[in-house]
Image 1 (cartoon, rainbow, N blue to C red):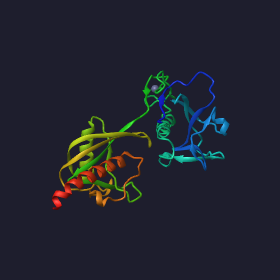
Image 2 (tube, rainbow, N blue to C red):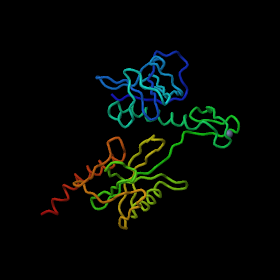
Image 3 (cartoon, rainbow, N blue to C red):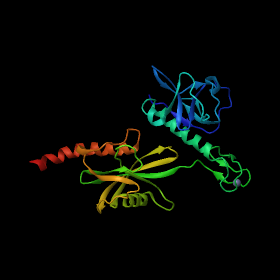
Image 4 (cartoon, rainbow, N blue to C red):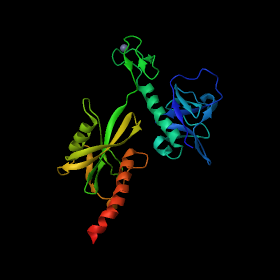
Length: 285
Ligand SMILES: [Zn+2]
């Protein structure tokens, strides 16, 4: 049965028997790991594990049990029986709900760590009345956790998908195109601009596909499907190394299953495998 997480801001006043602790060193999470598998630590206080978090924060309840997150010093070595694991590694190695809480936790921890002073007057920030915000005690400036929206797009052209190898990928992975939303843009305008900038083509019939928090460090990926409408591929070499149209039978190496990029490509493969089969028969005879 799927576990239910209810986010909350104010930590419980009562003495608690234990809580799930999502503790990070940088972007890696401290997990209990042995031959039986991987688990998030369940303790009353992280000091029981020999850990002294620099920052702590309440997250809410998971099936009625409290969840906290925290971060530890950069020079900490994991205690015996624990390991430091990245969230990409932990995907599908821990429960999906646990993983999404960890994604939320790392985003909030990173915000806590990086937004320490008022960006208007330089005074140290305090927690605001809305605990999901920080407030400057001097000038009243309020700062919410930063969320940076980015679009990610699968462009289709006659049964083929546009995939590109980014200059920043260090492997031979081809993926769909993505880019950050700029001030004043609608999401559709971002889709049109990014595709034009990166590969020089025009798109039409932009449709929403889904979204995914991507806290590395603070993105929200908003996925779309679009249709090719004109132009020839002309790559922006600062961002893209190679780009092309791929059909389901000739796909290059594609991203891992954690990403919404992969969900877009999987959707395309499934759709083409079904329609490709029915379409091919009349054409082939
Ligand atoms: Zn201020």
